Length: 440
Image 1 (spheres, rainbow, N blue to C red):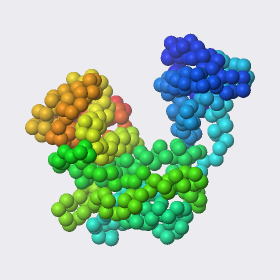
Image 2 (image 1 turned 120 degrees about the horizontal axis):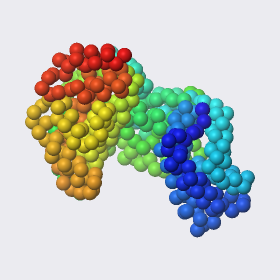
Image 3 (image 1 turned 90 degrees about the horizontal axis):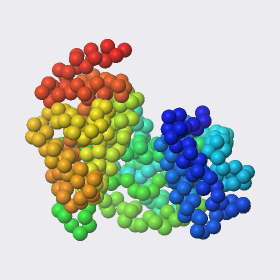
Image 4 (image 1 turned 45 degrees about the vertical axis):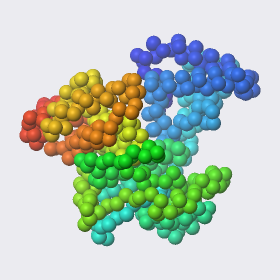
């Protein structure tokens, strides 16, 4: 698999990119060093070139296929070394660049694929019977590959640094996610998506259709819930050696972990209940089952939507929390094939069954536009945020529990376009099914 330009876009952009490469290579000295005045210029040109690759080639797909990640190296992108090689060989055309880039890809293919286990401490309490804890663990693993585990003595013995070891040992549970790749950076990207979606599922079960509010304080923290994760994790390679943190990074992290971080009582945990005021265990299971049963296409959409829902729940800034909830809705609505704002709003008003919630859409969309296009901040209220949240919940629930299984994006487009609040979703089933059958 090689990196290639989109043929249509290549004709329009080839001259510009060719000049961009020439200008970039010219900034190098013969030994591949870059003078201080030229360094900033090169960084800017690298970023522009990388943007062209991301938007107009299969660059991202190739690296995903390789299970590797293109990353920034220090102040520069991975393109720095490729441009350097062109300078050494006295070459500077777009064709030369593509040959060098694909040679770089071939070198990546020679690297082995390793198995990595990521362990992340989480503030989580499970107030449910042991047999239901087992069920919950099974469902989380089946739905998105997330394992809820205990901090065992064997694991703790692998951790260097007393503070990091205390942090892990002082948690009731850890999250473990296994991933494979040619580098940990690629796996980290995959793992982060899974963790966010997992926490989004738990957050949805806890806060779905609930209005929340906080007293405004000097901290300006108006998040719906405190993030249950810490900023620290470990990575074990091939079920044996801790490869992160290690060396200098381990020492740095050890110094960053404070007593209040280790403490269980510094921040509230996330709870799963079955017999208290907020009985959320059944809904957690329902959400995880819906996530697990979804087709590959719908699973990817749900992973993104639930991940952003989790971000919105824990977002301290009220404006950004409102906007993240709204974007969750837009992510799903755009699979209807509609792109214009007024068309999306019209569709949203048809989907929302609650007539009172439906009548808030215009105002919320107006505030969304003021925030996005003018960055008009300070006008989003907590009730605004709560309404944006409820709308996103309606759409997520629609994908988690549709009236029939939606197999792919094409069927989702038909499904969303056919919905109407005047006809209950289940009544639409036979109509939509018949349309889908005619497509096959």
